[in-house]
Length: 110
Image (spheres, rainbow, N blue to C red):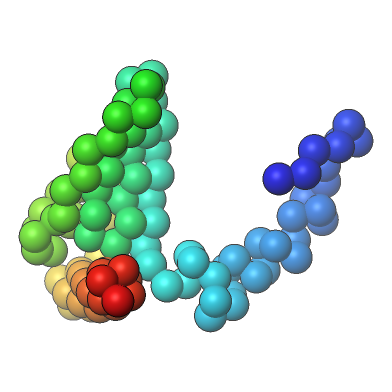
């Protein structure tokens, strides 16, 4: 991270935002990531792994076993409304998240 005393403008973020949103090498294109901070810690969902980091740095992680558990975490932990997703949309998203999750797990094992 770089810090300057001059105010930042939206244009300052445009190149990196474009890369993060569109480039195949962007970590945000390879896996679904949700994050949320509250007074008691940080929740992160990366693929099918739900993590909670407490204020002193302790971390708990658990792998979500199926689409039902995944979508439950999306709605209850992160407060995201997914009512606009059709059953086919949910199935497709669940399959995409699972493929990315399995690919990441295979890379970590290697």
